[in-house]
Image (cartoon, rainbow, N blue to C red; front, side):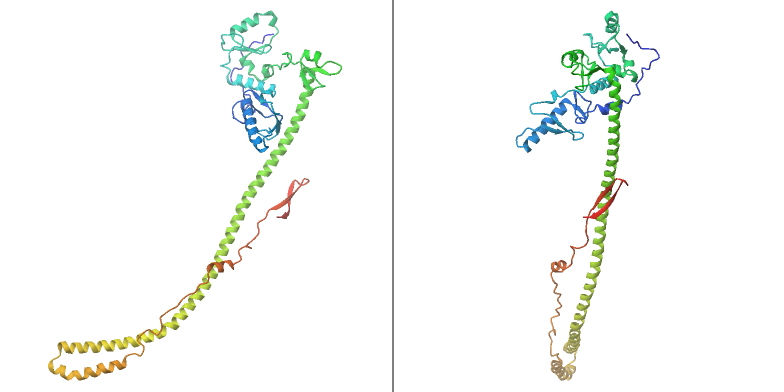
Amino acid sequence: MVIKSQSNMATASDPAPVKQWETLLECSICTETLTQPRTLSCFHSFCKHCLDNFVATHRKELAVKAKAKVPEIFECPACRTEFHVKEGESIEEMPSNHFINNMLELLTLKQQSQRIKCQSCKAQEPATSRCISCEKYLCEKCLTDHNNFAALSDHVVLTLEELAKPENRAKAKGKPRCEKHDKVLKFYCETCKVLVCRYCVDVSHPRPEHLFFPLADVVVQHKEALKTSSAIFEQQMNEAVQSNLKIEHAMEALKNNKAKSKDAIMHQQQEILNALTKLLEKEAAALFNVVDNKYNQAIKPLMKQQADVKDYLEKAKSSLDFAKNIISNGSVDEIISLKHEVEEKAGSIKKERPELMGPVHNGTIEYQAKPSKNTIENIKLNDLGKIGTYTYRYLYNFNCYIATSLI
């Protein structure tokens, strides 16, 4: 059966969620589209060479910690689910995922529809269609030859435009083949829970020991089972999303409380500094008053002594000026007549000389400070407050937390 394209079929871009495909088919290690993908039990897929390098690198690191013992357990790079690679085994031996490979093929078809080459001839002309039965892309010439073979008349052939349409994606997927017999896997062995080919049911999975059915007979049942599993995944995912949101809120609250606590500490610090400053200013003002009083007491005798000395200085100076003026400018009779008076003044001024010509004291006022370290140590700063975190108990019936204690 040959399905030919209709003139009214859309050839434009398919509105399918290609971005979702690209996300599904992206290796989270190299962030490129998967190549030779290997899928772990957690359903995360990685490029074979990326996963191989990941295992080799971590095997070296873990071997050092394990003291030369070759590690066999590793964590998924995406979700940390454990997977096993035994000593002597490699990623090459891990089975590939048929679904992921088919999705890669569809993505390639979607992204590179103009660059796909014919897989039937050596000329490798641009492909225009794909035989679903042969699982090969065909150019125009090979398609004509293919359609002329009577034995291939029941094959399903789709143009590239038809192949990209959502309703034909299932037809585009390659059929999985048996690794032992290279035949299409057409049966499902319920006993072994594996796909088998027609040779397997005769050789390895015969009745009555094994119970097997055609794939078409079990696919609906398995799809329903997958829907049930999907519902579980969705429920758990939603719970994890809500849990993650609550954790993010708790982290944000913790960050805000950290800032608030630091602000409160800084506020208290400023309050204490202000209080200490006031106390210091008060104590300093009291000491200033003591210094002023000491100064006032000490300055009085010095001021009196200075006044007496200045009076004596004025007397001595005026007498000296008078005597010098007579010597310089006096006439003969003035010099002779005033000589006796000046001599008497010179004799009496010695008697008027203050008894103490030196300062009554040396003017010392000294502040003897106590070591600041001793003063600071006497201030109790190790009991400003307490920093603690609350322990919480989750109430499932009320979907909330309550604080139980401060630790």
